[in-house]
Image (cartoon, rainbow, N blue to C red; front, top):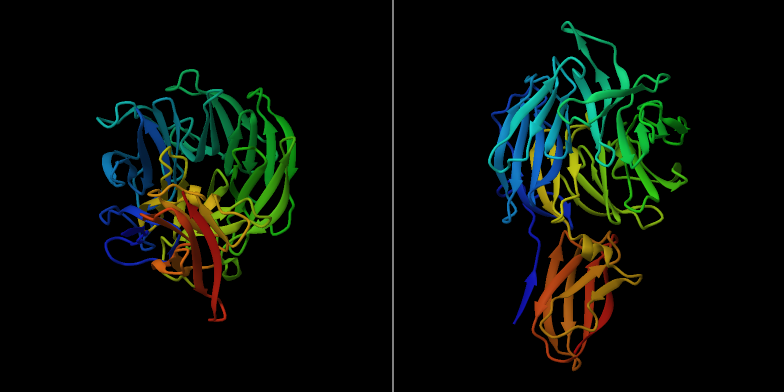
Amino acid sequence: MYRLIICLLFFGNSLAQESKNTQLLDHWKQDSIITNSSGVRYSECLGFTVQGEEYVVAGSTEGSHFFRLTNDNTFEDAGFIEGKYSNSLVVHRDYAVYQNLLYAVCDEGASSLQIIDIGNLPGSISVVAENDSTFGRVHNVKVDTMNALLYACSITAYSNDVLQSLVPMQVFSLADPQHPTLLYSGPGDIPEVHDAYINKEIVYLNCGFDGLRVYDFTNPSSPVYLQNMNFYQDQGYNHQGALSEDGTKYVFADETMGKKIKVCSISNNLATITGYFGTNFENNSVPHNIAIKGHFAYVAYYNEGLRIYDLRAATPLEVASYDTYPKEEELFKMKGAWGIYADFPSGRIVVSDRVNGLFLFDFPAKIISSMGNGELSIYPNPQISGNPLTLSLTDKTIDAFSLFIYDSAGRLVFTDSFEQQTYAQVEHFLGVGVYQIRVQYTDYLDEQQAFYGKFIVN
């Protein structure tokens, strides 16, 4: 008896999506949420944990929606906080977490900073403080938890109900977490800071059409300028980026049609572009938000949906995907995947799609990252009888294959076929011995190809 574990991928209840090496676990969408003719309802998402439980908050035109990620891999409603400005014109909310507080901002209308107590989840959530004068409209917020700092990017205050001039960025002390205290405003020579990535005291600033800047915020009231990358190949609107866990690579996206994602090497905190990659950029696709976990860059790629790249390759290689927005758009390329969170302890991934809502995914990162240098990785090898056998193909361009296992006498003892994935896990009961594996697939010329491997059962 042999049992094969296969990932089946569905959108909603029945409509199959373009996907590879990903499993859709759950999907949430609420059609009653207000929208305009564009159909856009949703914006950013952010994951966090409370008392060992995993949660996600997702922004909509109306406010902030909270969900617990259950052990059954579903979204469980955990509450809703209406935004100070709730309107179909809202296209951008953003979030950051410090201690048991969530900081929520909006970049449209008469908005505010809402400070939401999440420490009582799953029981309750509540707004414990709100500031609509200092903050007003804010595009993005980030928190430096180590130094108790709040970074607000592209911030527009209100005074006597009148919108003031946009400030590129402001940094606030969170010594009193419910009452942020201003420490810094700037930089004064550029019109905006769109987003920021914080690595201890070193902060990478995405400055729109002014490119990428790097500062040392050891003294948050007087940061030290380190780098200004204001001209580079394939430049567009420098939108957002993320640093690898080992601090050696920085990946950023230009939110401009047809522009590739850039990967940089980091030396002495300074970035040097070393490569360009992406999906369907020749047809004007647009990357949006990026998260990095382990060897992989997870990209919310607007109309291309979720795209996952292996950063170990000289040119990062796409190894997994799920098209959250399957509709083809000839002109407007920015309706799909917006937000991405890939840092849950469970390894689950959450993506927010501007039109189609919130998605929960599983991606077999350990399996994909265990691929060897040959055509086929088999592990553990040797293995103990009764343990699962895992097989991973090095060539991630293969999207369908058949697997055949033969014993030492040449008898076929297992066979099955796979689609939309480049790996397989097989639970089996094989006796001690040597087994041969044949993997068969059809190449881009529609010709049958095969390669082989061997494993031992002790």
